[in-house]
Length: 467
Image 1 (cartoon, rainbow, N blue to C red):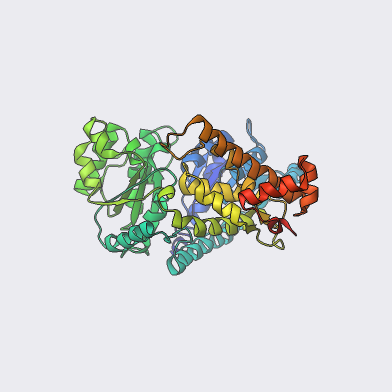
Image 2: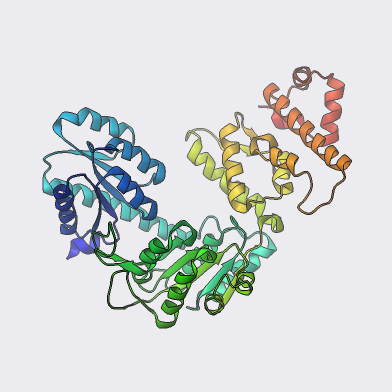
């Protein structure tokens, strides 16, 4: 049916404590080509949402335990992009209107018109799928915005990505947490021959063995408590596309054997099923641990390791590719400004001192830590310029005054810490005074000459702080 194709891929969750209403709404969704999941309470809905994305949530307002309005708050916190529709009796319309103010997209009064429900979900579904397609198209045409390869080491990484992307064999991506392994995985998919097919990602460390098996292999209705419908696993849903399995080192030993069989036989056995299902996908895995060491210790199957590591891509940590820091910082600065500042407020400027602080920082949290630092700076910066103390890196630097592994004497560590403190302190004073040296010196309890001496020692230009 045309409607089935139109809304293919839309994910709907129905939440109501009355089984008849859940069943009725699910049948209405099926009538427009959408398979809806069900939850009998707000708590059950949240448990489901922690393991599955949902585009639209249809929830009753008045439920025992967690109400629909409370569920709305939690859904928006957990998955802000999810559209929530409130179902309410006539007497609680005022509360439903309050839900609209708190992020709900629409409310329907009971008894609702079946066609009205279908048309509402159809309209919202078109919008969701169009937005998703537009994002995918932008990623294909302009490249993923986070694919930054200014440093020679990352230029080599993405050159390798282009070479191996056309091959359908498994790829293992290795690197510290926060280095951008999923970004590289998405680039592999985008450069492959199956870029027009799904890219499906799952974090092995975030799911129990049972949930991981259900997510990847699928399950049949009644296979376990809460399995009220058949669920197609990611290996089957990929339809020839890419499945990205992150934190692969966290997989339990028993599951490692099951995954090995899938890679060898290209079939899966959904949980609760009595027969295998053929699958077609390209597997990309990632880990922040040394799998070869785990193999030596008997913590990871050797045969699976070599199956996953047909091709290998190693992502260097951010501290070893400092050429990527300036362009990444500008990317994250622009993104944080769009998210956190009014539309008419200009983009803050990174001062030379702030950029120097970014380049000097060891970045134990890698790219993810850099993004957090820029987001923090945009939020706490009250003026047109971002200075080092806005980045929130000083506390880490004081506790770690030297580079990783650097053996410093007490005196040298103290000297570096004092220098950082002085630089941060005068930055704050100049920012408050708008670059007025006399006012800044007075606020610090220093003479103008002493304050200017500190500025010269640290190469600080007071004009950077002038409005």
